[in-house]
Length: 196
Image 1: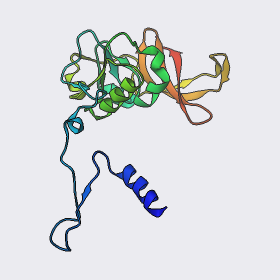
Image 2: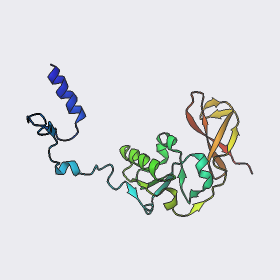
Image 3: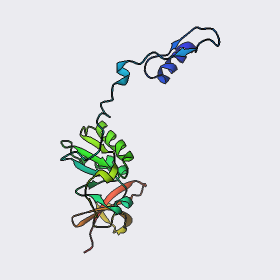
Image 4: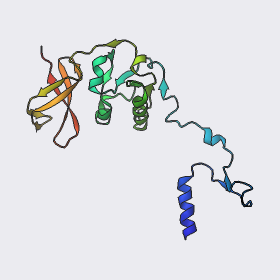
């Protein structure tokens, strides 16, 4: 029984071919060696194939996943700004029939988000490996991303929301999209009319 349990544990630990155990004498040969790699071991994962690009894909939606404080330095022209931790809650805003080029400051966070989006069925999601530097023309967004504003109490999506301090994500038309923490401590989005 113990040997069966040990074999099962070994199957969980070793990925790929099982090691070949040699019965050599002490000190003459290693106790085990790995079996030679096969072509299947070198096959690239389809979810990560072509995941990184140097320049945005032509005609793709640019998705900026940086935090609001990082947006103060500028945003790529025409980019949709959704902070990384809000992406799972905003999937309805993302197109499934169009490529999505995800970017952040340097390319590390965007790789993870693009990979996650592919797992969610957005097969055209790619990561901009150079970060915002490779996104093209950078514009200074109106509305002061990163600025703290007070959102008044009132009905939000049919539920009462208390007055809250929020951080501006981006201005879209005459509305400021802000993120605030709700009563349970989760980040939620609320909108506020932009001041004239």
